[in-house]
Image (cartoon, rainbow, N blue to C red):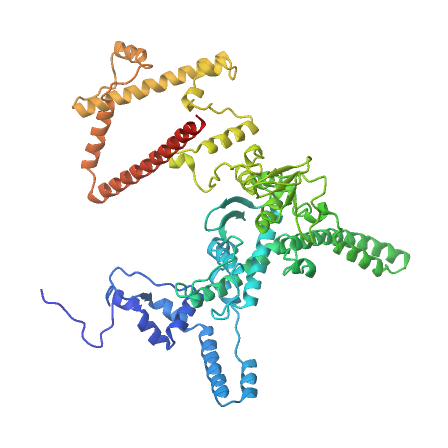
Length: 606
């Protein structure tokens, strides 16, 4: 077959007209490759995968409309002007003219990303859906040291730290934190904001070592530039949704002591008091103005202003300072999860020792209704306070102990948060090996393996809700047995008879289906009307075990169904089977490990 070539001058069609390579895009925009990468990150333009790669598989392709979108971007001109000024500054420095260089530095063009954020996220829900990576990046750079060689400045790190604390303070104030998990990578958090689940990762409070050649910090700093603006927009919207001014004005003394979360809680408390006072003052001032107009005397504005200023400053009581959401929106607007989280640590008072992760616990405990303090300056109350109920300690021994409080490890707080109940503290005492820290992001029922401690927590949750759960070694089918429920006094005799009749009918239908399936495999046509004696025999055999070859019949039926499948569906079905076998192998491995651990414990005891 003769291959037809496109004559010169004819218009391109198909993928050749819709996609261009990265080198063609850079040449078309007349920019350098680093600037092209920066533009793509700022505008949210990513490479495409065309069905047919015209230039070969070793090229990166972009859509023509995306490149046209970048071509009309005003930032492109600003970057070009900025590059021209940098050349002028470099030329002035080479000519040893520092005055001209400084004057040019003051005139260098600047830009903001506010318009780009509004373009990329026209709705607030869109910004919340894209907030996972954003918060993770901001929390990461908030924990990094400032390095001049990587262009990581101190102001950048402080700004990331401020944004992360503002986000955590809002989540703690409105009690929207749902899950917490501590891993080797860091601490995972999940919050629910306006119906959207936001999950982010924060690094541990350790000294961070930056790799030299493995990470391209220019690309990461470009992403961070977008993420800082996005988090600022989100915090602004969330703070105004609860009638709190943004950006917050914090106590400089607490900021110097690295107590930003506590300073934000005081700011929230002062704003809530101010909003209540302003509403009261507006109401009273309106009535007083009417009375003043009737009496002919002007109202005293100094007294009203003095009352406002007095309520601007919160009192020095720890209960008032750490109370986060008592004056916010009404209780009717809160959902069930928020009310449950708000009351988890209610009437509990915590004190943090110096070796525990302070920032994480200052974020988690108030988010679930608790009052917390720490060891150091700026704390709301001291360690000798007799009203403290729990002290968080992470050391092998504790010298001085107060009898009026319980000493627990930090894992107890996180396990209580994930279980939504107050767990017993015996296993979390000082010096003991705590139970396994289970991930709340794993569905044990779907995985097919339920850890022993997860079953214990489930029974404690059921006991708190007055539910009936099967005992260890007893299945759900035993719990659903009406005779056992009747003996235990859970149901009466009439309900037991009805449940037994439903169970008998269900077993009868199941046996009938298996018999029809077997007859279909054997080539015998099943009849819908069977003799009465066969039906009575099935009723008698309902409680007995099925034939041993039922599994083989079901397997043969599955094989016949696989034969009539198309190739794609059969491959998909085989892939699903491989996934099920892999999951079952993982479950068997966990069970084998558990058995070996139990055997080792028994041998150690003997």
